[in-house]
Structures are given as C-alpha cells and as structure tokens.
Length: 147
Image 1 (cartoon, rainbow, N blue to C red):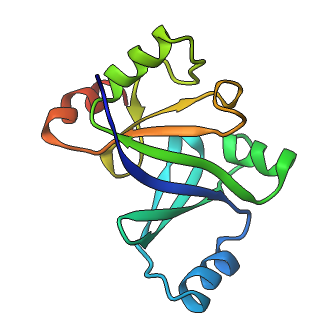
Image 2 (cartoon, rainbow, N blue to C red):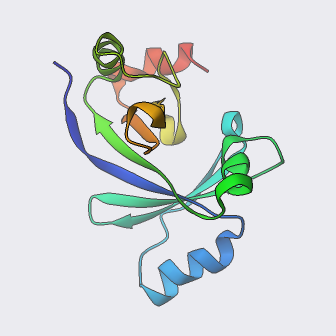
C-alpha cells in the first residue's frame, strides 16, 4: 500500500508575492528558498522552508491558470495542502478504487522535477489536496513521459 510520508508544503495563493513574501521573510524570519515558473499551471511559485515543510507562495502569471481562477472566486489565502507520498501512481490507483474523485488521473510534472497530482475538493471535505512524489532516479523516466 502506498504511504503518505509527510506534509510537503502548504500552498498560499496571492496576487502580490512581494508584500506576502516580505511578511514571511522579514517579519517572521523565514528563509527564501527560491522561485520557479510552472508553465502548465501559469504560476510562479516561491518556496519558504519551515523545518521539513515549506510554504509555497503561488502567484499567477496571466489570466487563465487555476490559481488566477482561485483568486478571482475566493481571493488570497490557503490554496492547497500538499502531502508527499512514496508511490504517487500507486496512491492514485488506490484512491480511484476507493471512489475518490481525482483532478489528475495520472502523475504530471510539478516544481523541482517532482511528480504531482491533485484530488478534487468534493472528495476531501472541501480541501484541495496535492499529492507529490519527490524527484528521484526512479521517477525520472515517468517525469520525462508526462511533460
């Protein structure tokens, strides 16, 4: 059975990462873990480590991506909870068999070369859940096929 290993990150949607980033880095003293552009989702992500977990600031780039739509309907705030798993494809199969509604039927490439998939909030008590399998030699081939 696939396992959840830890909370990987908490995604926070924002339309102005500068002031939000300043709050977390200057006011709270969190280190800046760098940023990355995720073209498929039309979003720039900035990671702020908090122990073994991270905060992920999500700033949409353009007018079409899922984070932009989230901001338009709900405004800035917590967007999703990300759980790290040891076998993403296996976890998706397991959840599908149990009737959980999936946004992503197959793993796809996420930030940092990881594999990700989202679960629909209608199956998770209203919480958008991202599952992630960290990049490793075992996931390299699957990552290349899902780009």
